[in-house]
Image 1: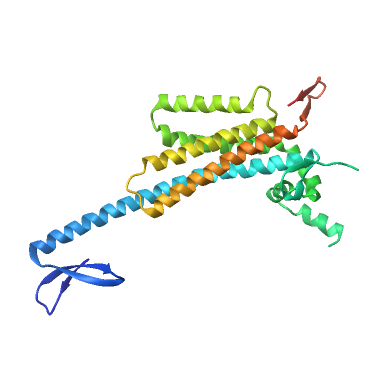
Image 2 (image 1 turned 90 degrees about the vertical axis):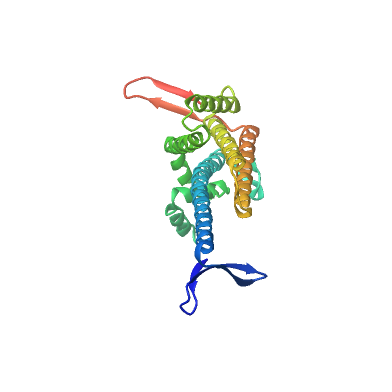
Length: 103
Length: 173
C-alpha cells in the first residue's frame, strides 16, 4: 500500500495483493478516493497489529503458566522416581516400577 | 570405564541430573539420591512455591478482581486437593494430589482461554489446541502417578525429631 508518483504527474494511491502467486498492483486513484483508501488501509493495519500484539501477550502468558506447571511436574516426577528407587523398586524395561526381588 | 571414574562422574552430576537418572531407574546414583532425599523439605518447599505461583497466576486470569469468585475457586481447589489426597496421605501422595489439582486447574484454564478467544487464525487455533492437549496429557500422567504409588504401597517415611536434651518425637507419614 503506497502513494506513487509517475512522471511527476500527481500522487496515486496503490494497493498490492497476491493473485495466484503473483503480486498485482491495483491503482486506486489520486485525490479524495486515494485519501479514503489510504485511511481505510491504515485502520485495517492498526487493527491487525492490535490483534497480533494481544495474541503475543496472551501467548507469553500461556507459556509462562505452562512453564510453571511443567516445572512442578518435572520436579515431582523426579522426586517420585527417586523415592521409589530409594525404597527398593526398579523400572522394568524403562516402563513400570516393580519391587526388586533379591535372590 | 572403571568404577572409580564412574563414581567420580556421578559426584559431578547436578541434583536435577541425579533426579532424572533416578527417575529412569539408574541405581548408580543411589548414594547421591539418599543425600537429596535427606534435603527433601527443600524440594517440597520448591514444589509448594511453584504450585502457589502457578495457581495464583491462573486465578488472576480466571477470576480477575472478582474477590468472591476468586475465593470460591480457591476453596474449591483446596477441597479437591483434600479429596484427591484422601484421609491420611503420605507426603508423596499429598504432593501428587496437589499436582493433579494443579494440572486440572491448568486444563480448565487452557480451555477457558480458548473458549474466550475471538477472531483467531488457524495458527492460533492450533496453538490453543496443542496447549489443551499437553495440559490433558499432564493431568492424566499425574493421575497415573498417584495410582501407581498407591498400587505399589510405598513404605511410610519415618521422621525422628529430637531437640537437644529433650524427648524424641517419632512421626510416621
